[in-house]
Image (cartoon, rainbow, N blue to C red; front, side, top):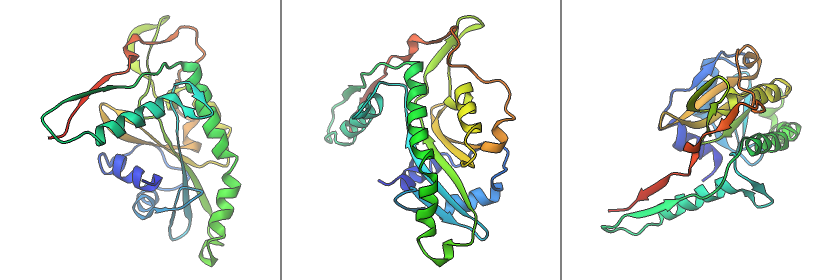
Length: 239
């Protein structure tokens, strides 16, 4: 499944309302039109042609697990579990599956920075590839977006302020705000995650994001991962 289909099928079809913080790069109507007109591409992963602009979107995902040359351990484990679920035989039998991978806040930040930087550095190449599609792509401004996916946010607590255990989305962190505000070639982000048990898209406009107030610093010594982060056991079956 390509990234464009994934965005539509696994997020927008299940929960079409995007949570947003203002619109600067384009209007809400423009975003809605673009999402309904997206076409798959190679690099960038998808694009849409509007009356007065071109929207391009590149997708990447990250998590808080250990990353090696083969990729992030958590993403690989979750994909294997998804494959086992989809491949389960039909019958009156339940199966039990569980991902097994440690996570850390340091890995979370390192994985985001690595994947963000690798895509951000290719933005000029993405624009050139779109321009090279033909004459209709020459004279319209290009609006650049990332579809960033972190399905399962870590559960954290702050020992110094509150011992309440809660999910922390990466876009709520100082590290995210600093990275995005220092990336002028990027216009907006569609951040995909699970929120209250449902897939959710958060629309984040780079220009508006600097107006968001308090953010969580991942390097705060009082911030800890919760023991509730144990990988959940999944029970599944086909009948």
